[in-house]
Image 1 (cartoon, helix red, strand yellow):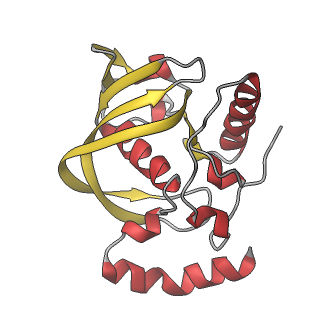
Image 2 (cartoon, helix red, strand yellow):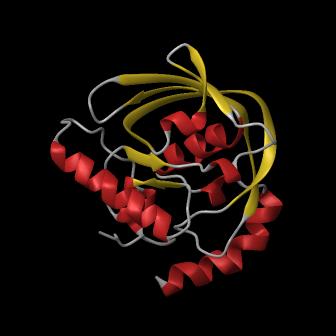
Length: 185
């Protein structure tokens, strides 16, 4: 079932999300609906607040053709180096992220900030502990587009949007467009 994606200006996008307390079958149904919604919107990530839910839940699916570089992107997953496609779509709750490495600029967009893209400076790598819907914990160490997407989506769980992370000059440039988006919602 397709879900409504909340747009810039909606207060739910600015709220800090509550941890998921109980893993139950309803979460898998929600995850399936979030994935379907993300695909329909041609996105690679979607966080629960983007569909109006104030919980720490994220879905990500980075297809091979979206990955940086020519070689398939890999990550250290529970101590083993594997292609990231082996864990896609990635569905998790209550993430713990530790970004590290040299920050670099990369153009980001967002399903909740339609039509706007801007360069965002983020650390190159992420170490993460992600609770899967079956209760297991995935330990992940990654770079590339997956590290970028994890940081972007987990920002949503804290009430941050990528537009909060752009340079001061970019904020000035985007201000009029963002005001217009907020008025349209």
